[in-house]
Image 1: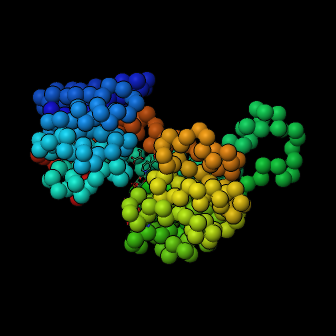
Image 2: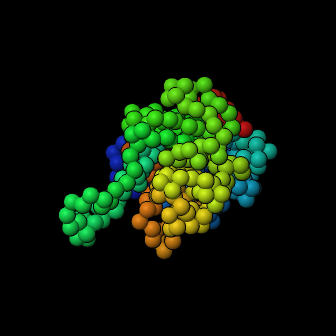
Length: 329
Ligand code: NDP
Ligand code: DGY
């Protein structure tokens, strides 16, 4: 018995194919499947009800899997498979305590997320949303020497916080723009950083010396709220801040102050707290803040491959065999 999501509303053929794969594979292994048959997140009450007695759970990053959900599931639950590489929505300690295995989706979304990060960085630094808006609202009067000027990557210093799978893929894509120095920070120096001439530096050095700061680390107790008043106060006034990791890494009130006072030049966020960000949120009043609705991995093919991998992980966990991407707990 498994409880899983099902995106029946998705119009993509590839997505439909992935859904078929889910259904055919689950039939082969004789699973009884309860599905939340919508692209919208499952309401908490339905999750708590649907998971009762289940042996497996396929969930999304919007589903908080905590002790309450695990208690509702009961002792049958053997495996949780999340359709994401981030696992900060899972209460890992509680899961580990119960001997439940966890599957996730690393690697398959790295390219799509790195690509989106570069797009967001360029859109923010070169003020694309503002420019598009000016064309539509009649603000485009003539070619003017300083109108809508922004910042370019050529000759710049880029700082990547968290040079993991996605951080590295972002660095590889940015270097050909003529980046002069690539700094990175994290818990440990990475041998693969040599490929992008990456310099492992303390966080403070990265923050004060970078023209572009890209956050691509995982959300942990250590990184939660890491980008705060003190962090922004060390940035150059011409520097651009980009976050495609998790919203909670940033103190958004402090970011608002830094952006509105001109302490930093601009910010591009694919992730926020909460999600969705309320439409009356103060960050949305700023021209120098570009906010996207958490679409880092949102290409049809990536979501299809993520779905297939999540199903393989679920089936491995149910059968007690290898999972293609099992999280080490
Ligand atoms: P990885 O595990 O490969 O990379 C995570 C990186 O975070 C590691 O390099 C790690 O460094 C670093 N890190 C951990 N703690 C700290 C710290 N205290 N300070 C600085 N860096 C730290 O994961 P991925 O690259 O695959 O994914 C990264 C994150 O991106 C995910 O956890 C998820 O939150 C987010 N994501 C967002 C998407 C979106 O749609 N916007 C799409 C996909 C992922 P070290 O090895 O030294 O510990
Ligand atoms: C993840 O996988 O963690 C992303 O946030 C969505 O793909």
